[in-house]
Image (tube, rainbow, N blue to C red; front, side):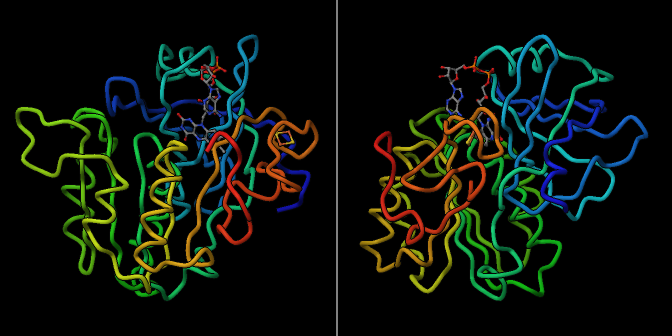
Length: 276
Ligand SMILES: Cc1cc2nc3c(=O)[nH]c(=O)nc-3n(C[C@H](O)[C@H](O)[C@H](O)COP(=O)(O)OP(=O)(O)OC[C@H]3O[C@@H](n4cnc5c(N)ncnc54)[C@H](O)[C@@H]3O)c2cc1C
Ligand code: FES
């Protein structure tokens, strides 16, 4: 991709909307010609622009191996996301991307056993990685997913995890919810102590995404299990505005999350930003 392609807003159309949880919907988007808007690497994002309303940075949650369309799983929390949640199939939106670097699926992750740690809507970018690895199974070793949300209803993509991911060879999915509830006989508790309980093999390469507290405490848990900074990749969902390294809204030290990230290994980051 030419560097300046991510400056161009494409006009896209929503062709399918799925309610995933009470406050998360997945939107399937194509160009006005019915084709996929652009190619991407798992972990890359797009700026979704609603003229007259605003714009939001959103991870592309579908795998690049899907050639017909791309999908975004979006949590309702403010102007743009509320507008999208009230939109119907056929709604046109502008999409600028791909933005950011993505996970090194053809680099540091290739050939490795992969541990995926996610919380809540943090599943969105890593979902793209897991499906990419599932479609190119021969290139990756064991896949272990540790994923948690507030409640069973808040587990995004639960159906796909139970009916597709769990049935893949050499793949384990460990789910947890914050509090006990009727109809849930799985694990109960927060993600970071669950990581310790699952006792993953410290030779695995880790990708994680979730709220700052989850990243911070899971990092501590992983280090106690013997994982090193160089083995752990995360995607940082810092506030962003321009998405192209111009406005200075998203820096961690000398790095811009939008331009140098959002994916970093912990040895690249040095230290977490104060809000973590
Ligand atoms: C790299 C990246 C990837 C992201 N991927 C996704 C995704 O796949 N799905 C998804 O639902 N969201 C994702 N987000 C978060 C998303 O960008 C914000 O939730 C969205 O911009 C809010 O827009 P809004 O206009 O609806 O809300 P606003 O009206 O702008 O804000 C509503 C509330 O959300 C808070 N908020 C706004 N931006 C952020 C942010 N970046 N992080 C935390 N809180 C924020 C505000 O403080 C406010 O409380 C991502 C953010 C980044 C930076
Ligand atoms: S969002 Fe503007 S510099 Fe990163």
